[in-house]
Length: 174
Image 1: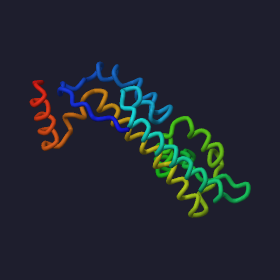
Image 2 (image 1 turned 45 degrees about the vertical axis):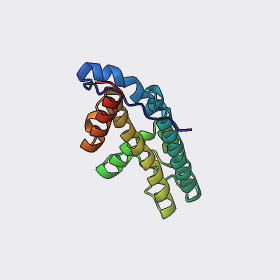
Image 3 (image 1 turned 90 degrees about the vertical axis):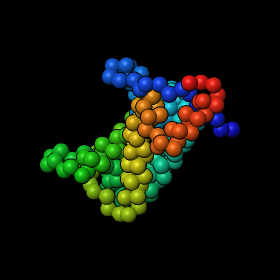
């Protein structure tokens, strides 16, 4: 049911151009469809979990924004405010943009130019669900970068790193 983790020999992490060459495709895949980045680097269980959680959050956010909406008033999803510039909605829009191309659909239905601020608590919860799905995807992009370049191994706590080194010595690898 679950994949058993494979303990590999620690390698020196990739740097600069080699790191960029190794990670640009998985990160792009993950931004287009959350979970595809993990799938591309071979971590299929993580890919499935990320996709299911991402889809659940978007579904809950959609339902709460749809049924909490007033008649003919567009509001709900965070969109950038540039004239005059407001930094808090713009940060919310950047966080929400992590959901990928689906952000354009949410902005068309629940936001966009001329949208009004959120008017009720139900829509606020819906916008928060969608924003958290975006933030989760941004964090997963950072995790994919670390895993694809080999940096995750060096960021483990000392007790976990000692356990991996012990397991490698028991298996005969050095």
